[in-house]
Length: 253
Image 1: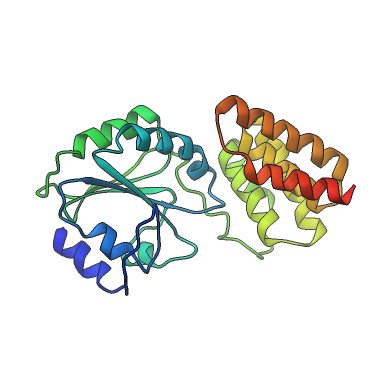
Image 2: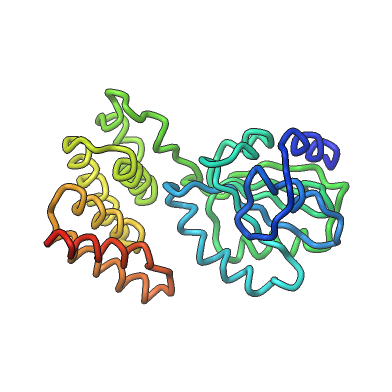
């Protein structure tokens, strides 16, 4: 498996820089190293709800294992490393040790599950066969798959995700980022309201605020944005983007 990983990554041109966020330009130099340290590689997308849910878990474990484990992440929308390695789901985690990919796991998971995987591979085992597992039935939902299609917001599409707060939020956030027509934005508001109804989190409340802002409902957007900040403070999450949104809302009022 070590040779397979090497061959695939050699297809990408790469100088070296030191950073947590990897790109096509520095993936090889950071991942193909023999230094007896485990690498946890996180493939994510900015629109991916489960990815966002994992952020505080990864941050906590990175702090805990910083002396023995290197944590990297790659934005699949901005790079091609995921294509080279056959990554099709977000998030996907690779556990690499001395250039060998020991295990590949798809989907969000609990802190205890991620910690057990880290400790399982921390000593390395280059003879291990890579296994691809799904950590959660909500692991992957590609909100971009039906972008622009007539059934993007059809009842059949919504029925498939209607009971998943994270998937609903992924669709709503994608709409905020990629759509400008009022019809789609109003449909996305209904979608995110259902997401919040199932489980109010910082991420879907923030999405709700952003959509309200984009549709010109500034008073309600400000209220939701402040609620998102309150949730973030309670959960110890970063809310810098919501602070910026609040500033934009106030400028419009």
